[in-house]
Image (cartoon, rainbow, N blue to C red; front, side, top):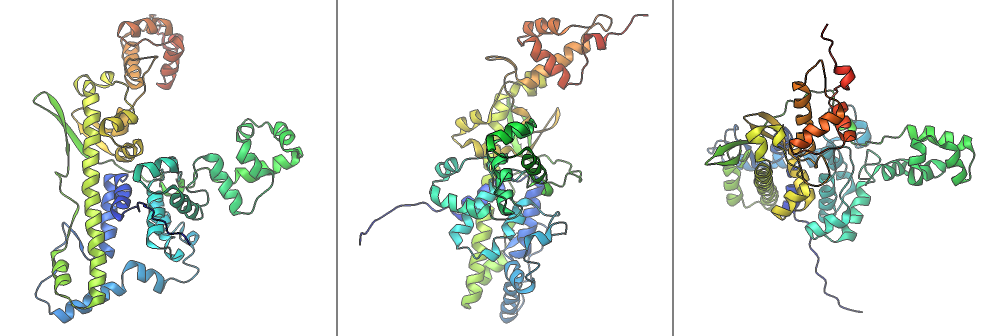
Length: 451
């Protein structure tokens, strides 16, 4: 026998909520809080009136026991049939396509009966997924970022990848398709192709694949038909692209004393408060079941409230750095944009790049020039070395073409020279590329006869 002392850091519930809520847009956060209020009596929406304080203690305890019996998780176990517990049976219903990928995955964890820490880690990874269902950030980075042991994250990822839809939690397309094939028991050429020969498959070089795998051309063609039926974006079904969403601004920016300052449009107010009524009931009750239930719900409400405030703080910090770096845009318009990466913002704030990525996701900034997603302000340099961003270069190019003599339109080479004079040196090939992206024809296509 050997006694060893080890030190590990468990992912706290606050960290979990912080990661989940940071990536939510305004509408998603409002929906999240409304759903939370349905299952947690201590979450009191701003518009909701407080319960009357004049009811008798016995009636209040009876009501609380009723709340406990009808808690969403308990109701889930007590009232759903075995068939309805199958997550696939929900797809296409109000619990399927009408919900998010995050909630769909989280709901599948209940029947697994995981211990608290294992569930936290799986939910943490769910919060790190992108809209397509991929886990783009390597586990090593997540482990360093939050101090969670890598083996624990690997076990959590294995659990996540076992959920529906198949392929979720993959690091890339190859792994995504591999997970789907393994789910259906495929171990032949199709699996080998998606693991090692996807580029050849995209080029339709079937004979080269057959030669490398030592199989017949017919087997490769059969495998190709199987692969074609797979879903390259397992989270796409939850994006509800058929619905039109009108973005709401999260932040506003205005000039004050010569500096552009960012403000949260909610004015710092959280979207809910912790019910004083139930806080008082927690102090008064001597029933251990009631106290246990309320204590758990109190902890959840306080953690979510902290995460909401942390989300706003991180968002404000990221947005202020973006505005400081892109003040040329607010002064002169899109041509004033400079190259900026999320890594630069992360370094300045001493955050992880993935934190910045989650913070700016689907967040919008309102300014005098209109409503812009924060992602709009990130752009690489248009040319080699320092210079304006690609967005600014496109804007300059569009302006030059708009000002040209339509009888003698500028060639791409002439546009190159004019851009260079304005401090935006680009190659002729890049000018042609940007022009085509803007949907602008060549000089011959833009020429208007004077007759």
